[in-house]
Length: 386
Image (cartoon, rainbow, N blue to C red; front, side):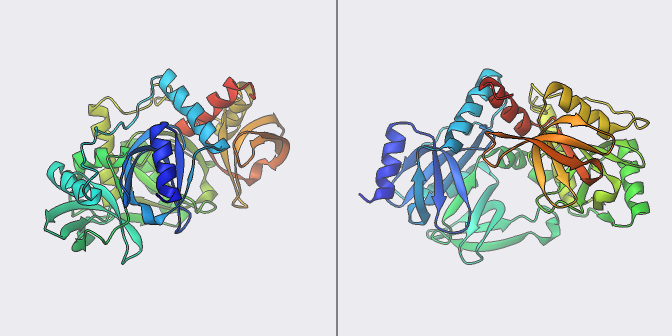
């Protein structure tokens, strides 16, 4: 028994939360060992928020190390306890009934085919992940429909061998909801993208009045983009009611108008997210119970100042995006006419660095009242650090 298998065995027998680090790239997974054999392992995974997020299966050959104790794991366990105490909604996957004496990957693919599940699979030859569905199974290969979430006309049916992948994610939060609605997406959507300020304002204004979803790419934030509905719009900026990748309420974000690079409406991805949002509403999973998804904002007010002031008074964690590209999680200590002093969390999200001076004009985005910030805030409060 090599050291990796020994670590997997110990973690499973002791029911330990682990971080699994891979020997390629910066990918790692957090969760509990569900089952394993000498060649494969299935992990019941958890997000950094501490919320359950389906399964991942991987070949043991790509595992570099199994971490069974760390500050990161302690932090996630604390958030898992908060999620349980507060009755948060999780994507608890179905119980597995696989035979560990046989290869696990074919069993996963057969289950995905029979249940028409959307999965995420890593293709060794293409060296990338693909979202899609298993369409046919043969003795040593399968037909896989690669789904292009942004343009369904680009979907592609390919043949993959059972040994062509080292990682499969399945039954996660996004994948489970997507499985329910994927067949409803029309393939004739006509996307419209605006990059000039006048056209950007037109599309944002249309979302504000008609409640349709928009995709917003920001000038100073290359980490992610936003999908949501515009619920406040004025000359200084916009507030989006964000919809996350699984179609659930994802908090709010204020974006300065000069921080918006481009806005897109009408593409396949926005239709998919809208369908997922509608499905969550039907399933009573639209929003976590601790979040307020029905806030309103007055376009005649200074909303940036109001958001910062609320965070300061209540010590609510918010995420700031600055023109420099830096982003911070924390809360204001003192707000002046031109700058503020900000208490920001360090990289471990365990300790505050106090008194950071931030010019107000440098702030281009403020994310607030979203579940990740809420859980970190509650974790720090329980420890007496806020």
